[in-house]
Image 1 (tube, rainbow, N blue to C red):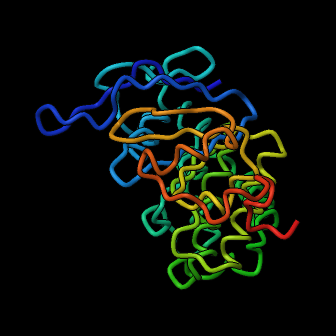
Image 2 (spheres, rainbow, N blue to C red):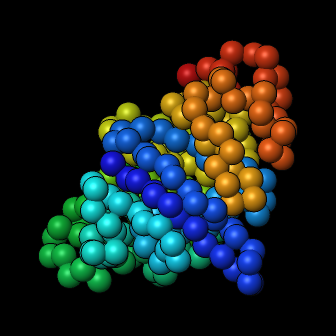
Length: 248
């Protein structure tokens, strides 16, 4: 289980971007975090694998502070950033995916086998020799996800993965996320686009001005969205299961 206990962060004097955050993400759960711009969602994300060090509070993985072994925490908790270009370092898709394992000095055969497995799982096989920056937006997002998946994380955190994607791109990325959850991964999805994925999560967390305002069953919280500055999905009177961009 990934837990956040008493997490606070202050910038520019007294401006709190995170205010005494307490959350737990049970193993195998699918959580969506929603909130307006500036609510603290991305700041929270950057603490979950130690990219940012808490000023106050703690992040625990399996009951142990991630600060005790940051390298291990970053393998177990993978972050996929909103801007896929910021995660691209390789000259080809395959070399980009292999970057992390190469730094850890995995045996070459293991790296090659794992890269092939990942590109096949994500439908990137025909793109593996392409330069990442020539890919479409959706392909870049999936390549960024692949570079995280090769480290075999238990928890996958995705920050606005649907931004800038067309229908096909959203469907492809969402299909990957749903499949990974069904395989047992813990998914934490930060998004403004609730209508694209809300049907697949088991819990919704609402943030505003650095606070957790509400959390619980998604269907029980839809009436609170506008109160906390979150755009209400179209047709919130329709069944929750229809709030997805997947065909089935």
